[in-house]
Image (cartoon, rainbow, N blue to C red; front, side, top):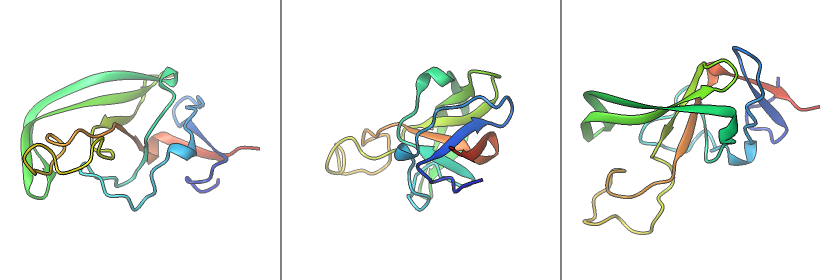
Length: 132
């Protein structure tokens, strides 16, 4: 097995072995901070959407987005393997800002500043192998 950050890595589903066609060129470095966290996950800025199914998830319960900001309703999208339907990750809207500045009123959390999508995959759901 190679490093998860190698440009020649092949990412497959641990359940069915399907090639998920994830490109390491779109992989965020492991030390990048995200509001939703990145523990035990790999985050990509872009993916091949034909390899996955997307399912909206809408939960009404308290959650912490950042240390000083919390919410009641969490809306996110599940990423499932097209081959077997296993949950492999989620789509979050806490990627890089899509604009300059501090938002409308100088506030910070992602609800004010539009952000790019981040595709967050569970390490346990991926098998990383070297391309030969």
